[in-house]
Image 1 (cartoon, rainbow, N blue to C red):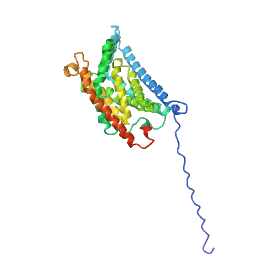
Image 2 (image 1 turned 30 degrees about the vertical axis):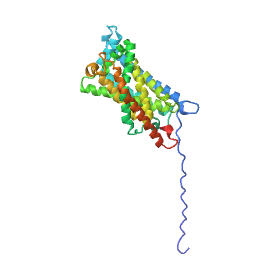
Image 3 (image 1 turned 90 degrees about the horizontal axis):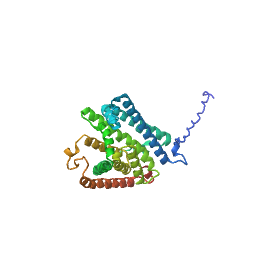
Image 4 (image 1 turned 60 degrees about the vertical axis):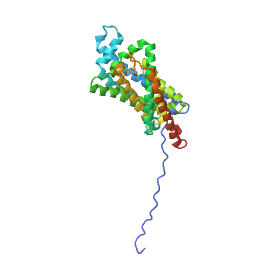
Length: 327
């Protein structure tokens, strides 16, 4: 050509082929032929057993390192002395163990045994605004009933009261720093990590195979038993089932966490007061809640429960079809 060589023709750039989305392999208990419900029960039992083992090892170490109580031969007195003298480090270790076992342990176990979206299974979304005041209202109405249920065990088995009193020093506070530590260890930490394990993991998985109210009853009963607080078993069953109901009705873990924090806080406050002297209308001379107070507060509990049921109905009605299983 007179005008120079012809430039080479550009070939079209091939477009990259879309890659198929990588679907993570389901965990051991989510595979065909296995039961996630059974896996969650085994996993929760394992985590609680490891937590209890760690706590008992620490208590035994303090007992062996402090021989002052062995001369009396009274095991309850020895235990009371250890918990009283080493209250602060024991409370700190309680927080550490709850984080390690109920928090981190639950997270790792869920990833290994189940997989999938932790946020959806544990319902880490924010609750409906109305769920929070209604959950608190219901807890306030049921609180005297829970105390009364605990009193029944106290009256039926007086020797259990001595066992409870041997560990009562852990929740007593006589200085601002002690109050902060007790609030953190007894109120805040369980409200976060116990709810993460029992409501988020256990109930979040049980609800896939069990319908309410059976998922509430099983989760609440398991929650009560693993606390190993036999004198407070009746109270723990009531509050455990109610927390399970709040988790289901509110569709979020956070409303139950707030109720858990307030319930434990109320128990701590009462443990640091002379109930009969401060609230003679609510407690008798033995520190037991009066039945008339229980009856007077029950309508508040019923109102909170019914209001939460309405919140759940509106939430499910607003959800898209097919989403109810994740709610």
